[in-house]
Length: 94
Image 1 (spheres, helix red, strand yellow):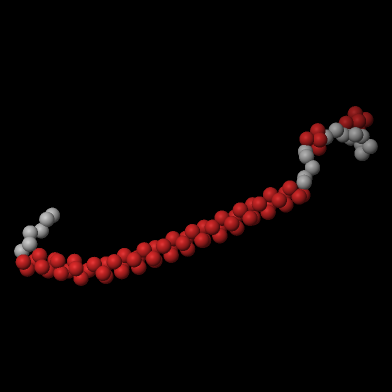
Image 2 (spheres, helix red, strand yellow):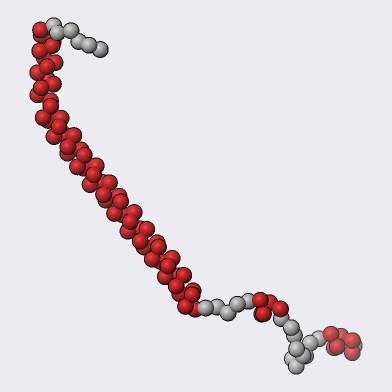
């Protein structure tokens, strides 16, 4: 039985821990800066994405308005030409 007691470590025995030496101390400021950078990156990306989408919608609306205005301006001449060709027999080029 004395053999079993010899293998049990006693609180006064020194135990070497190699893992403790390999671990670097945590730098709280560095962790904070990394978290801040990640948060800023996500927020800025979200804002930029929203701005780009809004700009695309505005450009699309402007382009649609320009096409509509151009169509409105050119439509009477187009209709007149087609009616004239139809009734006067002007040959159509396909």
